[in-house]
Amino acid sequence: MTCGRLRFAFFVLAFVLCRNAAEAQGVKVEDTRILLETGAFDPLRGPQRIPPELRLASEEATDRWIVQFRAPLTREQRERLTKDFGLKLTRYIPNLAYLERVSRPDLDRLRKLDLVRAVVAYQPAFKISPRISKGGTFRTPERRAIKGLLLRAVLFDDADVQEVLGALGGLPGVSAAQLGDFRPEGGEARIEFVLASRSGLPAIARLPGVRWIEEVAEQIEDNGNTAGTIQSGTPGSVPIWDKGLHGEGQIVGVVDTGTIPRGAQRQRDGSRDVRRRDRRRRRLR
Image 1 (cartoon, one colour):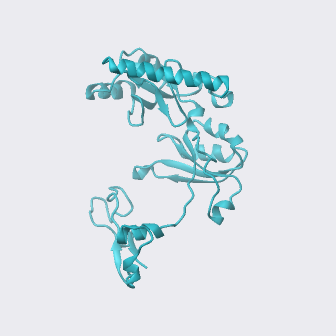
Image 2: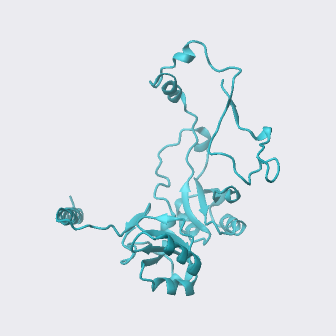
Image 3: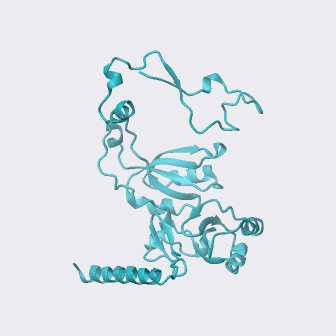
């Protein structure tokens, strides 16, 4: 074990022992770190070791902030923050924080509130999933044929999708960019694209309208074991199929999370009738 790793191990051990001792004496230990998929940090100290290419040159360059509070917000506090500062308070980040868009004048006022513990800029480094290119070997010929990384950029809810699409498509190494805007149905706007190499990630993360960048998961149809589990409780054991029952000629209605009030499946505004052609049906084979 190297000296650096040894010091880190002693630090972790000391932290755990001190925490356990405090809890044993009845002292409540609060975790005030910001917990992101890219890492954890105390916002009063700021994120550590961000590469220059993934750090904002200045906080003036962004209006996206992580706002952390000292305690869970009451209903009255939420209403006040929404009214006075325009906060949405919908995109929660552990612990006690939210990702918000805040103007500079509102930011200065927000930092002075007693209920606010810290406010830190949403850095480009926070936008890149650490799992990109870590999934191992792909199984399908279609995915193996892609030259580069098949990625998805998730946009902020208020982003100009066409502007982001144009900026993204103009970056070196980006190809086959396709936009999917699901905000009218309550979803998110996202752009799937192929990136030649990881070296192009910082430029994408610096786009103001991009909130998150992740690798598109490989789609594999592999339900053989699932069928056995459903039929007998044992993967691979299919007693119903063994008796020649495969569901030919039967139609099953598939119900998911309900209808979308403003969706295209509505026959007319205010109507509760659903068009037959939009009903989801699956034929068992």
